[in-house]
Every structure is written in C-alpha cells, then in structure tokens.
Image (cartoon, rainbow, N blue to C red; front, side, top):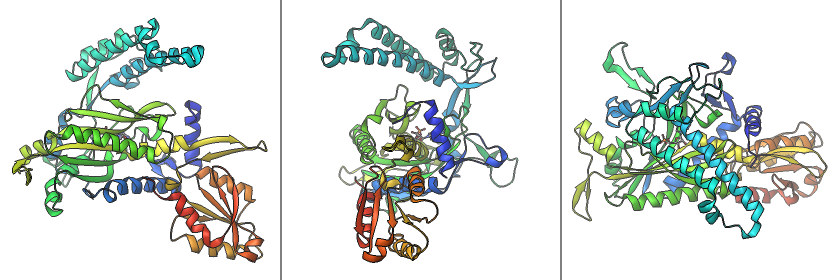
Length: 508
Ligand code: GAP
C-alpha cells in the first residue's frame, strides 16, 4: 500500500474525480466534515453494507437485523450516559486560535515515541540481518528502553487523568511534555474543558425544554430499547444478536482526515446478548470473528492489528479496537466492546420496564450481558479505497492508476466495450449487456480508444472488461481482460457470466 500525506491527497482527489466522494454542499464552499457519496462511492458503500449484513444476519442463524429510527426519546441518552459523559476534552492554542482534543495531542506524542522505537528496531534488523532477535533487542537496547519507559509513564498519568476527569492534570501533562501547536509552534494553551458531542434539535413546538431531542451518536441504543421486542417476537434464545446499519451524528470538534472523522457517518453495529459470566468467552469469540471478516476480503493481513483500550468507556469491562494502517498510520477501524449489563440495566431503571430474560436452561431470570461489534462504514470505505489505490508503470513505460478493490466489493463488476460503434458491434454489445446486467452491476461504453476505456475502468476498480470485436460476430466469443494482471483471454459469450460470478462471490 502507498503511504504518506501526498498519497492521501491523491486518493482524496481521485475519489472526487471518479465519482466516489464529494464535499457536502460543495457549490456553497462545502460543509466541514460532511461528505456525499457519488455514483461509484454509493455503489461501493452499498456493497460493503451488503457484505457486512450478510456476514452477520444471513450467515449466522442466531443474529437478526433491525432498522430503528434516528430520533429517540431523550431519556434514552440520559440512561445510556451520553448526556453526562459523551464528551471530548478540548484545548485551544491562544496564538493560532486552533482547537485540539487534549487526548489526541497526548496520544500523538506517544505515537511519535513509538515511531522512534520502531525506527531503532528497523535499523538494527537491517544491520544484523538473519541473526537479529527483535524481542531481545527490545528488552536490552538502552534507547528503546528509555523511550518505552517514557511512553509507559505518560500513559499511566494520561489514563489516570481521563479516568478521574482531572482536566488540570491533562493540561499540565501537555505542558510537561512540551507539546507545541502544529500551526503556531507555541505552547500557549488554554485550560482543558469537556465538550458534549451530541447534536440536538427541537421536536414539535419550539422553545419548550422538554421537546429537546438528540440525533443519535451511535446506533446501538436503537437495538437496546428494542431488545425485548425482538427477543419476544423472534422467540430468540440467548445467546443471540441484533444487527443494524444506520446513520450516527457527532459534533466532532477536531474533524480531520477526510471521511475518517465525520460529523454525519454510518455505523454497522451488532449487539450480542449473553448469559452473565459468559461475556469474556463471547468477547474473545467476536474479536476473532471480526478479524477473520476483515481478512476474508483479501487485503494484506499486515494492515490490521488489535489495540486494547487503555481507558474503558463508561459502559465497558473490556474493549479492543481493530486498527487499520491508513496512509496516515494505524488508526481505529472497528471496536469490540464487552458492554456488561450497563445499557439494558440503565434502560430498565429509567423506563421502569423489566428487560430481563428467562433462561429455560438455568430456570433463572436475568438482565443479559452484551458484547458489541461496531464498525464505521465510512472508515471501512476509506480503508478499502486507500489500500486499493495504486500507481503502476507498465511494460511499455506508460502509467496507470488502478483501484485494486476486492472484486466482490467493486462498484461495477464488468464493463462491456464494443471495439467500435459500427458494423453491428454496438448491437452485439447491448446483447451482452442484457445477458449480464440482471446478475451484477455492469456498464457499457463505446466512446474513445479501447486503451483509454480500460484506464477509466481501472481507475474505478472494475474487475473485468469485456471487449466485443468483429470475431465476436463470427464465433460468439469475446475477450475478457482482468484488471489486476491485465491478462486477456478469449472465451465464449455464454461463459462470461460464470467467470465474473466466480470472481465476485463472497469468500467467508
Ligand atoms: N456503539 C459503540 C460506538 O459507537 P465508537 O468507538 O465510538 O463506539 C464505533 O464508534 C466506530 O464508529 C468506530 O470504530 C469508527 O469506525 C466509527 N466512528 C466513530 N466516530 C466516527 C466519526 N466521527 N466519523 C466516522 N466514523 C466514526
């Protein structure tokens, strides 16, 4: 995968040029951290959703899917803890007037120290060659040890500051580490203060406080409040899961990195309800399953890693992220959280309605524990886009930009390209289109030289180009060109559908 700021800029430009992602309200100069998906982007996004939904709901007999409303009763957010605790600690630089998340400034500082360690390791690996023992080097090299010690002590103080909501010490830590504002270069910081991330609006008549409602900051609560409805109407037996895909909204103050951190985004979440005491077994199970899901798409496994949380959210007793190596480094892609009985317990208390399960095997009633898997759809999109983007120099010296999107997720699966419009080739092309378009997404193009048409399809990640030429009229064969190898093969028209279907089928 290509890396670095320049590559990331190219990916953003490519996403716009080829109809994947546009800035929201662009003609009005855009709306910050809000994006629209274009013709190819929405197709790719739908394919990711479809693969996730099928992997959860269709391939697991004990998981069902729902679609809850975005607006919910305001007490939901009081019960869930979001009104009181869904905050980011913010700090401003007085000289640049730029606002930052205090936790991110400190995490970035630790990441820089970690980079230093990795560079030492890389250098030593090169120097010692095959005889290099990384574990021993990490345990003995004085520079590595010194940096690791710094990271450990910063982390200890940082986690304590967050857990105890000690905003004074978070500021003191930033000052002690001599963190400077990347814009002004100064250390002239304001105090750290908490900022709630939920958007709110009024429902019905304005002005009355009781009409204040929130745009959901996570889809999970729509599942919790429907837990009993689904369990009863679906006659679900524990352990079972409820999955959902939908929009979530967060007033992110530091919204950066394109669609990585947005104010309106989509989540694909699954809450798995289990017997109390069994949650750690299921937590491990879902960590493994979700990593397998990521690997099943065929992107390099080295791009993924687990990261256990330093500070647990108010609802969790264990949590890990699946991180992905984006062009700007390893960052969170998905969270797996053991949420205990926090949410159902809180909704039971605030609503006054029992949210218990009678377990026929143990003859007991209890509030189930929950293991959650939560992935940002837009982040998954960005992971695929950034991993897929490649610039190649071909044998003849020419260049191509190709998106090596996993074929099952590609927006368009096959392009039908008559070599020319005349001599009946266009009509034959339309015939081939009709043969394929009911089974998968196809496109038809007859303009421009064939090489240019191939490049356009490469640039949007189409796995197959099917060319109709004069020989097609004689023996009903076409050439089929594969995107990644650019190899061409002549095959009978009636075989095309199966070749494409074989390539794009889900490989779980
Ligand atoms: N229900 C649990 C929950 O919402 P989270 O870690 O806050 O947990 C889950 O969010 C996932 O949602 C993240 O791993 C990320 O992929 C995605 N996500 C969170 N905030 C986002 C944002 N502002 N923009 C895009 N994706 C976001």
